[in-house]
Image 1 (cartoon, one colour):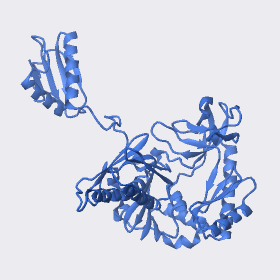
Image 2 (cartoon, one colour; image 1 turned 30 degrees about the vertical axis):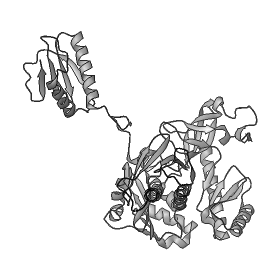
Image 3 (tube, one colour; image 1 turned 135 degrees about the vertical axis):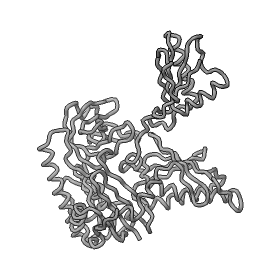
Image 4 (tube, helix red, strand yellow; image 1 turned 90 degrees about the vertical axis):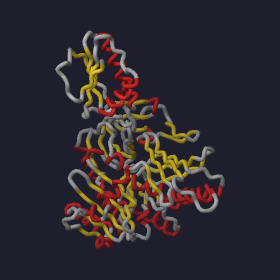
Length: 497
């Protein structure tokens, strides 16, 4: 049984796809994560970089967005395998207003990537507003159906525009496709009216609503039901489906129970495990998933799996199960970009090909475009997956304010060394005593070391007071010069003569 669950709250919208009760895809949308994929903006050029053949455009977000000249200028040609300008003229200048669409979401310190080639996706069709190209999805393999869709697209395509038939267009009747083309053309006319009335930078078309995108791009005959727990969203979905796919309307229902939709289907409990760095496999092996700004690294380990027959068979069994779980985790966490997988070393080319074939089989169930490379000489496998939106980690996690996202903090000995250095420096430059405040774990460690051998070099007649404070971060050291402390006898203060 295949289901789509949609939970709508004022602070966050969630979508989950379940197959036989198990989540295979979860997506989140909230104001803080700036879901901008597909949005159309009227922007203003903030700066032009001729050396990079690009410009930065202010579209009203926190960071200026990146626009390459090849995405806004027709005067580009492929030269020696690289797309280069046909002439040296810079197509944009600072202050120019441009209509652009987000084609790649931001990541790390980077802003979004833009294109001036605007497209409007529908359920069965993508309308190309600045191109007269006609195409059919590569997932439609039947040659007769491809020819039918191509001929239809050419016959109904608006002048000066192009059409791409999506996978959902297969076996769709002509009347439905023609009706959708008219709908998208009307939407484009409405957007152009907004463009003329608004001042840059401004949003002119919002395509980021996760509910409508999920229904438009995911919902088809393979789903048994869609459950929505919000009346307004339910009405919007029903109105859209009456236009685009009336045959599927009876599969959509409103969740009107008091109990939480995601709690009943145990989605939240399972989603909480998404952020675990270590993922166990059923045969005792495990994955370690480490995301970085440049790429995501996945390490495969045999763990508790020792095998029953030969060593090579045991390794292959772990790697095959890891391939299944990697494809599942990449879809669940919505991991995009470059993924490097370190499978357990295999000596046989046949075994390596079997692992690749298993990955390809599992990725065929994923709508997001994925490419599987070859094993390198070091045994690493490179995978690329299109970044369609912000992944789960970017919504559910943020960089630790203490370790600044590095994932580590100073060890106790490093903090003690810092404290010794700062205390002795203050003793050298002042005449009084010194008070040092430390986290209890560090203070306890320091006192143990001080019992074996004096940690500080304290001049005669001077004293160092060590105060243990649980409210301090473990890596924090607070040092200050003080007068005589005879009046302080608190239990958390230790006097070092």
